[in-house]
Image (cartoon, rainbow, N blue to C red; front, side, top):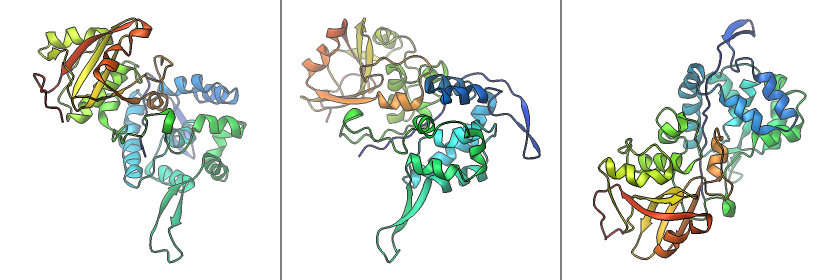
Length: 330
């Protein structure tokens, strides 16, 4: 079963101050929470996401992520609790509150419950509840003040599901241990995230390559996919036409693309790739949507070379991350 994680991103926000619960605290939303709420009420979740993103690359947003959201998500992941990060963000955002350890623990108590394998209660653990149950639990707390007047249907649509389990619609049946809470997939490490291109094939390959290779390839090309082969060669990378594990495959033309070669056994080549769902992602895509467009695909070398040709693309070659191509890639 594929288990993936999510994170947060965005761009500039204005620091304002609000009086909440008797204490002066920086406003989370920079005054935009009302616009987010109106967008969700109207069912325009795309605009709501875009507005929220403006906070999470500001100084306060980065601080919140690094000091609160990221360590809390990592803790949840260690407990095999894979929550959609919007379950943590939205209750804070629409109440103009910044997260604290206490507030995150309170939310955790609302979206998890204890389950035991048998009546002896010797083997118990936390599991995540459904979106509907989480919303009902939120209604019993002060967090719901910021969510009032939004229909349950629209809130659940925006909050999304508890677990990301793409099945046939996502990354297939291959075990794929990518860590989407990891540093390589987010700002400030990933330059494509910094520029608003989360979800693009270049964003994914930059992240996956550095995840697999312990962040050794921070000098990868930063331009359009079609330019990667030539730029990498100019930077001193070995390039060529022979497939190899731990390499980057590049296509040019109208359907330009890059993908990461997970394995090659001499016959079958397996690649992982971003922005590969058939619907091209736009700038400022949320990580949740980006994850849904990641795919793992396998075939022979002929399939790989020709797979972009129907859309006006053409195969250029491979960028080798282990130096000169090694024909023994098992």
